[in-house]
Image (cartoon, helix red, strand yellow):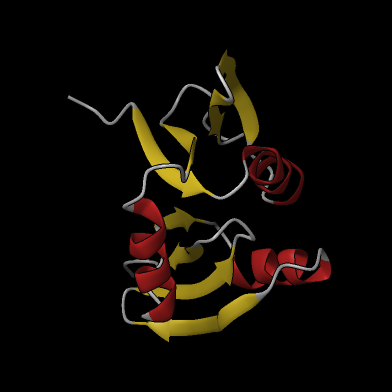
Length: 131
């Protein structure tokens, strides 16, 4: 068994598509109209056949309070792994991404957290070498 699709709730699918592709560098895998919304998934350029991230509209009434609580408590909705956190942090800052937690040492990983402009905090991690 493996993870096929995972979901992140977004306030605006068009805005999320732009942010997740143009800024983060993911690519659209599926873009299927479903009434007012879309089945919109993105994948990593490094793993195009890997796990898809569904950019799910935040329409359900339970979603907004849930997302607001996570952001208020500083809890990231998802975690993405990078090879070089400092380089990725600089690249994203140069593109205007707002970080709520700058790169820091967190034991076995280096981590940072940014605002995805769609109502979520996202964590970036770099795994430290095991030595």
